[in-house]
Amino acid sequence: MAYLTPAAEKIRADLLRDLKNQLPDADTGPDSDYYVRASSVASVAEGLYQHQAWVVRQIFPDTADSDYLLLHARTRGLQKKPPTTAKGAADISGSPGSTLPAGSQIRGERLAVMTTADVTFTSDTAEAPVTAMQSGTAGNLDT
Image (cartoon, rainbow, N blue to C red):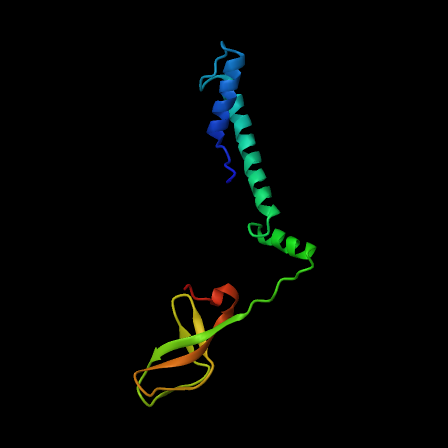
């Protein structure tokens, strides 16, 4: 079950409701001292609830921030692996009989790859073996 953090407005309303239950004659209107105090306490409490939610996320490796994920790994005797480079094939177009040399760069909007072998066009298109120029997730295509 998801942990829901109450908003400051809800916390303030709950505080004022509880105060009104204890002191039925208390002025809890927006210009009252009780309202101002409840607002400040609610703001602090909201921050504490948010911090608790953050702490809970750090407890589990699959939701932990990167620093705490490394801590989880270290306590289990694991180390972070270095990033690898994505490899695959790219369909390219060119003139029949021409050659695209190895080391040629192909750039898209957010990804750049380099051919790893010479490719000779026997038709208008050819398949070229490529390697991403950036390692890790930055060199991956969304599929």
